[in-house]
Image (tube, rainbow, N blue to C red; front, side, top):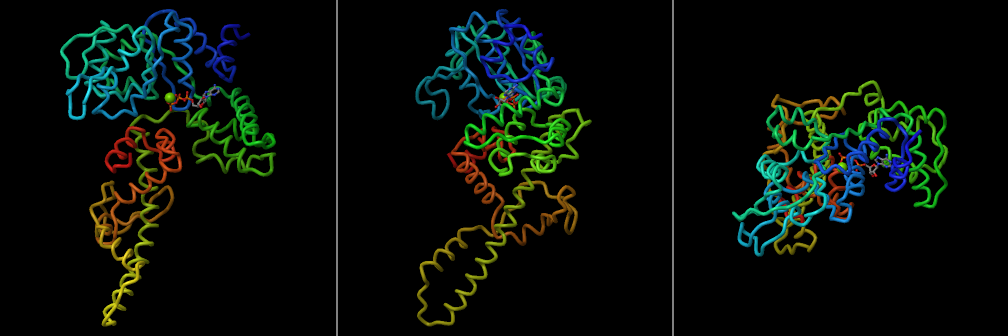
Length: 421
Ligand SMILES: Nc1ncnc2c1ncn2[C@@H]1O[C@H](COP(=O)(O)OP(=O)(O)OP(=O)(O)O)[C@@H](O)[C@H]1O
Ligand SMILES: [Mg+2]
């Protein structure tokens, strides 16, 4: 029997599911909401952590105060202190006027520090001071200011590991995790998978004005047996794709599997989450493969252009009074602008000859070959890939980062680096 206050909270925030782990997490959030202490929410990516700071704020004595959510992973290291704590005029180049930080803005309210594990160590020191005494300094100022803010932090990283690797201050970790709420991964909430699918498929059917997707028994089993590495977010995305693309509104297991990446590998019983290092590695691999693919496509286009320019040059040499067409000028200019090549800034196996990429069986030339053969740079390719992805996602960084399978921080850095603002 689910307590009435938990049921109301689920309704208020649109939370679906009755799994004991989820109900425990909501019950705990309601219990600790009135206790004015820091809270740490942990759980895998896409598990639904973002509901919890809101539940806590809305049920605390600060509910009429401000609630500010900050994605620590999306703010570049260079500006995060100023974003959080503010700065004085002239504190750094570009600081044309003084600015209030979130901690000053949220005085009397709650700050949600999402992806807190991404905070640089210097910022961690400032945060510890706020947690201990409510005191902070604006960047470029020596005047101690006071604020009264409750901190709710969230992370999908293994914080104990981050502490043991020296990436996260131990004292801050203990301070933040005085109260800890763990959100279980979706694969441990099996009964909720079908409930969530039904809710999402009904919502998407309404949004796209199409009949609701129905699942065969076989398809239901596929959903239940999948490992859901991206948790509820992944289930939601897949439901949306199916709702849009499947003309046959009754979906069977085989069709469904087509939407689940690495169905056989990602299936149970591999319950252990990837360590942050492994996650980085996977992201890196995906990013690398995507870049290679684009690079190969561009390489082919450039080879065609090369041939065309050569042809035109020969024709020009053969004619005493050759007037290049506007088209040939454009082609020639773009070839002149494209640097012959630069070193590839990604790790390419150092062995001689070609390397077989095990996951996809594609052949990756080694670094030396790139230097000789590439008529363009990897930077160009990367810039173009990011630019297009940003356009596709209407400039939304979170979505773009998700599509490119890189962190928002990396995306932010690349946007700056390539002047794509
Ligand atoms: N129990 C649930 N009921 C309904 N929707 C849910 C539930 N859990 C998660 N979602 C939805 O799934 C998506 C991902 O959830 P959320 O953003 O809270 O993930 P997260 O744990 O913060 O992940 P990350 O660590 O990647 O930031 C959101 O659209 C959220 O609304
Ligand atoms: Mg989140």
